[in-house]
Length: 253
Image (cartoon, rainbow, N blue to C red; front, side):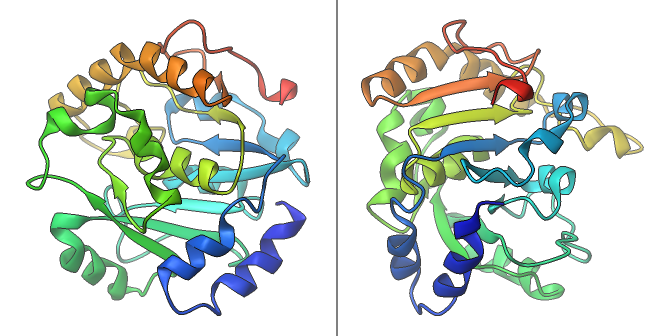
C-alpha cells in the first residue's frame, strides 16, 4: 500500500458529496505507477509479493483480485455483479478506498444488495448503461476511449462493458497515473479466476462476444493511450490485445 492512501482515506470519508471525494483524489498519485489487478485466471500464475510495500506504486484491485493481495490494495474497484451480498469481501482492514460502480438502470436494486451485510463503500458512481444507451455505444464497441476520462470531470462513468474500462482505468487516470500495468487482465476467454470454484459454470455467450469485440478494438485503445502519453503494459500470457502493448512479468514492475 502506498503511504498516501491511509491519510487520503481519512480525508475522503470526511467529505459529504461524491463530487468532493473524487475531487480530493484528482492527481494525488501523479508520478506513481498504477498496478491494476484483475480477476482473470492468470492472476493465479504470479507471485504478487513483489508489489508489497512499494511506495512507487498504487494498487487498484478489481473485485475478487483483492483477495490475492490483502492489506496491500490502495483502491478496491467493485460492482455488484458476481458479488456475495451476504458475505462480501474479507478486508482485514479498511485502509483502502472502496469504489463501487452501480448500473444507472438498477441503482436502487444494487443499493439494496449493499445494505444487506452492510458493505463498506467510500465512493460510488452510476454507470451509464442500457436502456439509456445501446451495446454499440459502450466504450470498447464504439472505441470512444475519451469516455475513460469521464470520471475526471463528472461523478459517473460509462458502460465498458468491462469494469476495467468502466472504473479501473478511469480511476487510475483520475488519480494522475500515466503508467499503468495490468495483472490478470486476460481478455481472451471471458473466464474469471474464481469461476473454477463454481460447481456448474458455463461461460456466458454474450460475455464471449464482448471479449471478442474488446480484443478487436485494442489497436484503437493503444493509439488513444499513446496520444495521451499513457503507457499501459500487460502482465498476462493469455491477453490477446494488440501486440504493441508490452508484455512483462511482475518482477519487471
